[in-house]
Length: 331
Image (cartoon, rainbow, N blue to C red; front, top):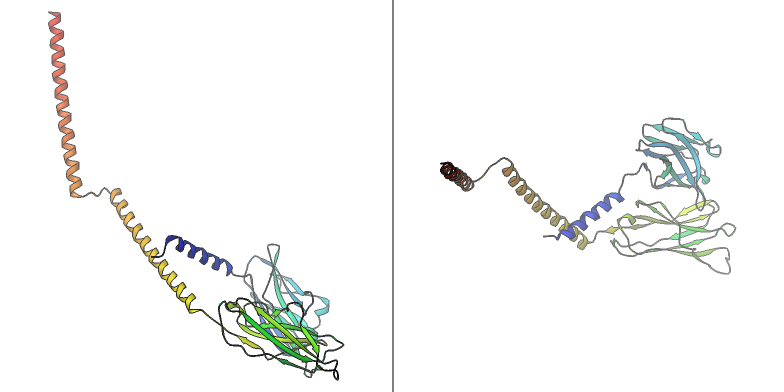
């Protein structure tokens, strides 16, 4: 049987997990969405909290600050679109769903789009969706190499390496990691810088760069497809991606199963003990006693009756004696 302290520790862990998975006020599309220049896209946001007062949309370009696109009051279907987005951006409302529609896409529309809600004077953001707008003909001569990866287990270390060969515009070259399908934000800004070197003296402007990504202890939330991307000349070029699969540890599964089974046993024992206590208490409250108890009570009652009668007889004798003494004195 699982010790009581271990059972309490398990309950504490369960409470922590439930608190960590508290329902968010906003649900938004996440990951990466790819579209071409000139196309139209729609991004969805769902507001599920009645306490929300305002809803807004934001755009954040790579390396830039978030810019507000629109804002509206919850009960007003008409949104105020800011000037720089007014021509091609539109907000549509359908019940609890809100849609951001962008028409005639341009390269400058690439970036992360966030749905934000105001709840009790605090702004809560959705997970964010990265919109990658592709040019029909890129002006960057580049090659991005990403290796394949074997499935990992919970707690393993993740090390990804990306090699980029490119000719940047006017010396501008930025590398990023993106992830799609992971339960986290799509854009992962790299650790300080990347290592680049000139390929040869004949082509001094063409460079070979290496970008690394390391995660010490992976969890199920780290599963997904990881892309290495080159940003240059206002364009973003993605690699083929590396799929990261996280397999559960059998030992952990067995331990959790044993803990769950032990907790059921403890709950059953506690329920049985409570049932017995309640049954005994109810028997006492209803005056139910055994035959042996009844005989004992009857004997006690008879003994009490006899004692009372004997006591009264003794009192009468005493009274007669006292009366006789008094009468003899008077004579």
